[in-house]
Length: 223
Image (cartoon, rainbow, N blue to C red):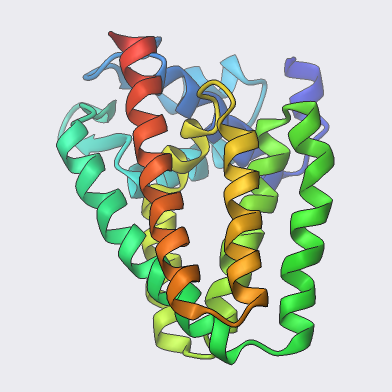
């Protein structure tokens, strides 16, 4: 594993380390309060400290780790209430983006969404969480851009970054990848019909189902 990681460039390497730590934290392998030392992690993943530092920065932005005086970086305590609040907020933002995008997107933007959905079918069949996570991110970010409201897109992206680790983790629950892909198809159908209100309702439900899947995953792995 270490040899494989060393062949990857720094950006992808930090993503790989972040994903591995995300899985370890949400599965309970790394419990709340566990100190995360950059040098130890660099040795564990066969990497330099630079991608490790970037991975920890991203995890801190998601709230999975905290930087504490004299203790350095430690695993944060997962609070279901806080996670639920964050998903509820992003569900409303994403619903708004879906509604506006339905009315404002160009045919080219609509075609890109359709292509992303079609391209993700193969990784769904393969059960490839990391590949689907990347395509899922591209799908949602394309919707943000299609609102043609720069400020709204910035806010949606900022909230998405806070939830990135949790959104990836929920894809590991049961057949959540397949359900997520199906829900994207339902959202696209509403967009194709020009029904922004229906697209918004389906997007809101999509996000809240993701939150429910995350809650079940955490309870099954940590409980």
